[in-house]
Image (cartoon, rainbow, N blue to C red; front, side):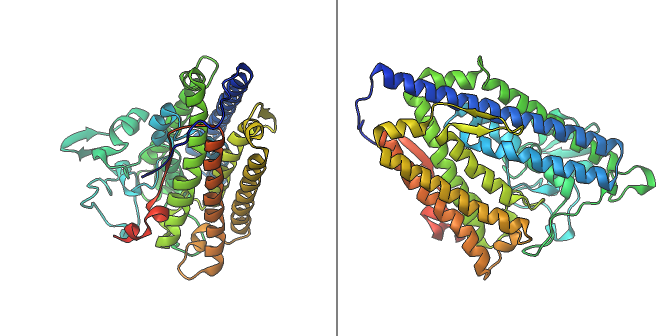
Length: 418
């Protein structure tokens, strides 16, 4: 579902200086994308090293280190989501690394209450780790060796089912934490480190294959991020696409901001879970890291508007910004947009602070939990309000034909329960 906004060109700003300013803004945008994906790559490489240590020397210490590295890797990646929706190269690729939710029974053992195959997904409980050979779509698959190619070429979205997520951050998350069986109660997944142990110390069987799957998924994540980082380099295709047409480039920036703010984050990632009171609708549901994912998604939108990104090493990439363009067109609107972004970050920050103090996001989703609903809806309402200002920015800059992603949870709530 998309919400379409069209405008007439409100200002004839096609002077050379204004065009140059737009080019400078797009250069900053591409530079921030390159830095954000670059940080996503380096933190994924740190995760890769931690996973290799866990597999080579299984222990509780090494499992915790791998989990810590996974959470750190989410910080830059979530900020990169502001480059979705407006950039086809990103959108065509994104499902490889961040698709969710997933039917985790495709990958490994699950609790008995999980159930088996369903009419919607015949592979929902396939358990590749336990089965060196299996039948998929009527074809026998040899999975004796678990490789990145098996994951990406055979298992990812097997049978055309989006819930068959075999790759990316969330497959790795499941393999590090296991299922979160606490419902709306406190606590994340609690996979034992002995799931990767050798010999008689192995728990839940197939420890060597589980390690092979975890390594293959992590290696694949690194290679996918290497590819995307290259797309935003000076000679990269994504950068070239943005820079080729200034109007389309500015449109891509605003589309990403509006779609992530409204349909994706406020709707699908926050309001929907609250309507269903369903902890399975958490974005990082195995690790209870959803509060951070929401926070850094919001920060990514702010980065794009302000033309500034703080790297994981503390340095800053910044330059000409949408804020500068809007100031030239309507200084009051720029002030409004900055205030709305600040309000959103405050509301998302309150969710983050509460979760870090022990009030987990899945607890906030529980039916009848007024404090949790207030926190989540504070973020939802701020994101919606922020989108209204983005719409006004679209008009002020004379950008035509932008379509923001929508969500039934916001646009047609009754359809959620049909």
